[in-house]
Amino acid sequence: VRAMSQRPTRERKAVERLTTVEPSSKEEEELVIKDGPGTKLGEIGNVEFKLQKSLATSEELRALHRACYGRPGNKNTVKKNLRKFSGFSEEDQAVKAKGVIERLNVKVAKKLLEVCDLPLTGTKQECSDRLGGLPPEPTRP
Image 1 (cartoon, rainbow, N blue to C red):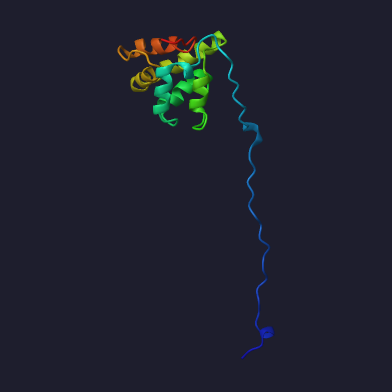
Image 2 (image 1 turned 30 degrees about the vertical axis):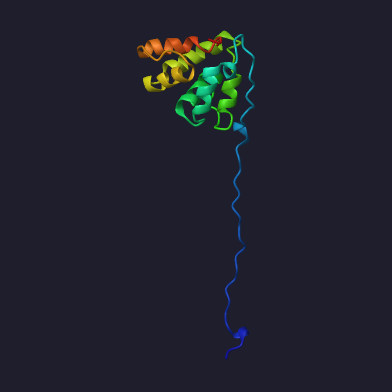
């Protein structure tokens, strides 16, 4: 049996912990929902029913949120924000929304028409015109 003092031992190195630094320049600002001139989408019966049936992560609700508020929104707030939408308070917001809606493919545009309780027939241009006319001032049927 050897004594411990006779064995050579290696020098232990100090452990350097890796830390991540979050970039503070990309802070998400809180979404401010301004009241528009129309009825809130959540108060329209058929639209509320379709919102309840749809998944918050679905492409059509995220596209509608992007058209209404200029950002896709996260899954926890998409439906809540869409229920509060009552139209655009400024004209430039409506123009931006029309641009977003025109870039959608036909399948997503028709799903949006279904959620908004509008007729599903027509070409892509007719569908986007119908959707482009929806957000400025939603009303009860």
